[in-house]
Image 1 (cartoon, rainbow, N blue to C red):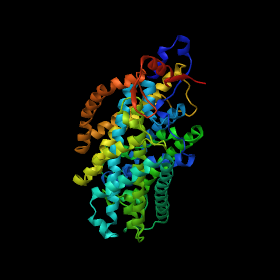
Image 2 (tube, rainbow, N blue to C red):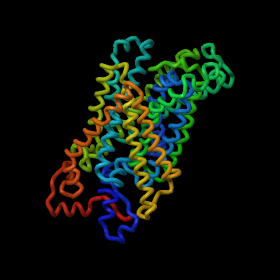
Image 3 (cartoon, rainbow, N blue to C red):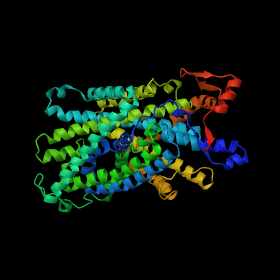
Length: 517
């Protein structure tokens, strides 16, 4: 039941009061994530293979102009994370924006948003599995037997390990994700310190003196024209993917009101330093033609400066970075699927949790679907990352669009006096929201123009939409049955029918909207 439906169902004086939605999907979780873990989950979710691996190909295609693409996308990433922050402070939920879509727009949008986001994370898993396999390929020169390990086998092994981690407990997930993210940050800080030192002191790299003159000597900021930078915005969107992960973690966080604003502000700051700063520094250190598609630009840099073993160490750190993103993805999808299952939009078995409060059924379901990534690494090892990246960018736009739409609805309801906005708010609302939605449309057009992978990815959307529509007609009876109290989950987490009396009682106590205390 959406906010609109619940408010309109009550008497006039009740409609005028401020109400607050309570999500049923949040029951059963253990709020064990600490402030430092939330901080690192927020950072780790925002830094992944899109920067560590994808930037190499982007620099070789667009040159230093990639800096501007990252900066422009960074502005809209800031709007997205601020919008999500306002929603989280309005009501923390493990269902994240899927739960907010249900609150403000109803079950149909929640269904579409949830399955779209789940599909997005499966494609992210494919990209990260491919990245881990590529990083392991680097070590063939150091560990000969790795040369006999096919790319798909590496991907399968990593997937099995990460699934096992997520099945234990959220506390262990949070601790491991803290250290995974720590290694990501350490890698970037190390690179930034070494790179800045070499720029300041003009230390030659492969016969080139670092600095702004290096950009001037190799065609300027736009060596290949403006269009490559514009076209590559769609690839940069993938690099910013997962900044919304902090919204899911909020549902299992301690002291949300204090932790979340700090975590979100930290993400925005690190976007500027880690993303824009890293791309700018890479452009100042070496000609863009030195960077190789499929190889991390950080590995290329450390290999070029001649420090023995530095490239291997950095590659190992980047390997853990890809594992971190995959770990976060498995965590998120398990909870999103349970949010869908609780309301009937997903198969009932996905509601199951273990004694540690882990939605193991959803996690295993995602893992099985991620085996597509293993297959792609077996049959399309050279294209798996690019295909997954294009699909992820499109699906991510849809997820972010739902976040913006929910914030706009929250803003509208607050203007009507039906709801109170939290103190932590989306900047320049509602105009920043409208501008962000327009930007998403532009990015989708750019993806469609990126032939062949982007074009085919965009062309697949109508077919995906058709599948969602068919799926809705399959599950809607169950969705409305749960909403009306005719179906419910018993103490064994099984979906059962209720009698008329039980249905009325269930409907009366069903957590939907309640007056704010």
